[in-house]
Amino acid sequence: MRKHARRDDNHRMVVDALRAIGATVLDLADVGGGCPDVLVGFRGKNVLLEIKDGRKPPSACNLTIAEAAFIERWRGDPVRVVESVADALLAIGVVATPLPGRDPDEDLQF
Image (cartoon, rainbow, N blue to C red; front, side, top):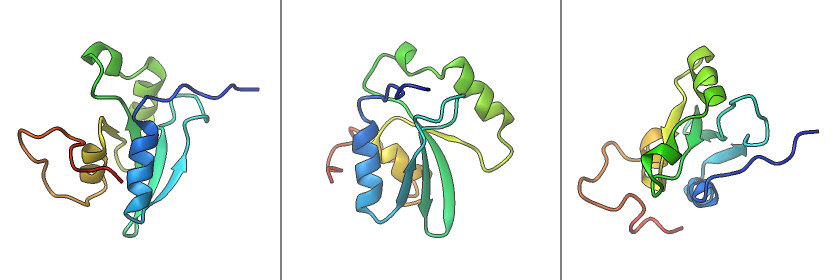
């Protein structure tokens, strides 16, 4: 039996923010095999997100071998890799462009 997967520190914040705007979020982090962290349903679209913590050094944000292989094999819409709430909102189409020069999660507390 698989143990619970380790989640990035910002995982809960991203999930909570997505739910706060009315998105349906299915947490897939325990699926394993490189499966992305969450499946998000919003405005009639489904988006797979791999959540990384952008506050960590770049080397700590790299995809695992299994994650990279899953993304390469996936034949649906592209898996989006996000590092913040702002990235997640951009990935699901809530905002059209990132705000330059701002902390990605500033003013986005839900």
